[in-house]
Length: 379
Image 1 (tube, rainbow, N blue to C red):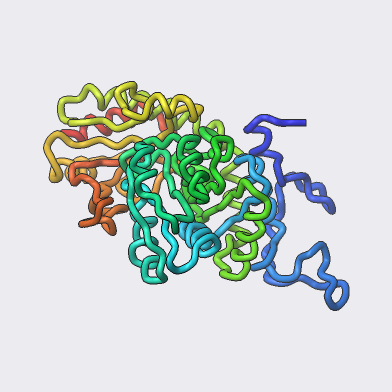
Image 2: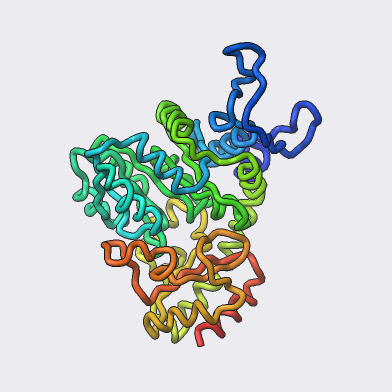
């Protein structure tokens, strides 16, 4: 019997605990497990890097939400990304990455993986021909964010899956901005879904984590081997907090989207805003593709300050209800200047972001209060 998203978020991997009937999965805060005999670990549990019941509950839930057979939880989104790269690639291989991507992802490729011998080429993921032109015989992964961070570009996942698969490569989709509630990349041909569960999945700005969900069980088991061998696992309390957040993901995302739509419309008509970048606006170049593959358009908005970079910085500094902070996806609204904050590592690279750009993570507060805060911050 199939269930709806909200039902899976609350129940998948989270049956009442067998011994007591506790309806919330316990936090198995243990490093090791008593074995019934030499070579006979009880229920397969021997050491918590290799397996932990709380983490397993989270992984089962994530797999159900993204529609893949195997999900794995990590200490951070970057830990998940690093594990994926070193599982699939070897020195001398090549990856196509977005020309607009999270600064930490770019740093991982440019400052860490490249030194290991992994080459990469940035390409505009909304341009199928540009991605195709960036492919090489050694390309192992086409790496996509949709929407991208922070310019909110939209990639046609089905079309890019065809490009990747024709070349014998995998399509990896970072689904952090959308969350599985708004889109499920595996249904559009992705081979691996990447998440920073710190963001919308956790949803309360109180836990750091990451995840990989594989479309193929064989690839999933390779990733599981490397998860254990490399060791950057999600701890049991972090896994429990993330599971707690998942339960309200659907209702939170609806409110994030409601608020973001109101704010995008407000900014779109403001004299002190040069450009509003939000996939839900019909003028956004990726609007039609987003409407095809997303349930709604998300809670992230970027805009360019009409007064240039210093105006953008002033807006960030004047905001009060919008908290000036990095990260995104929590119940509270955040504002940041990507060029000097989350994307500073991309300065001087093809991924450098405009200096006049402001990024909003729209929370679930009363929207009129958020609008009033932006009004005074814009000056």
